[in-house]
Amino acid sequence: MNRPPRSVNSGFDFTPSQTGWMATAPSALMDGPFGLQVRPPPPKRAPQHVGLSSIAEEWLASLPPRYQPLSTAQRHPHVVNRLAALWEKPLSLPDYFDELLLSDRPSRAGFSFEVLTELGDLRSLLELAMHRARQ
Image (cartoon, rainbow, N blue to C red; front, side):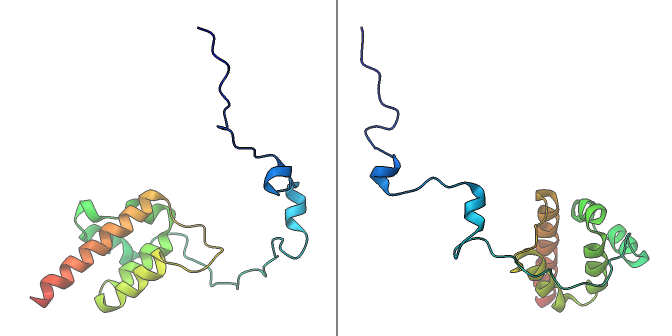
């Protein structure tokens, strides 16, 4: 059986003359009124601690093993230091979790999946503890 070859695009014509689009080089996207704008550098932050504080180490050890944020401690010790310091003030922790997980800073790269999972687990642990305290 000899069939004519089927068209890959199912009859749609995507050529520039039919759709009105224009091929442009990446450098052309950078120029002009709608190009990418150069943003000023982010404000300078205070230097972050290189390692975990003694308070953070004690806090990590006090958590159930399933909730210990070890990847976060390794990759972002400043976050764990802050969590440990705020853990004694549970009413301020939801705001800090929101700041970490729902940032509106465009230059923030975001956390890895492991870190996001650990932070989500910690948030769940906190919410459970706060719920039990209310009862």
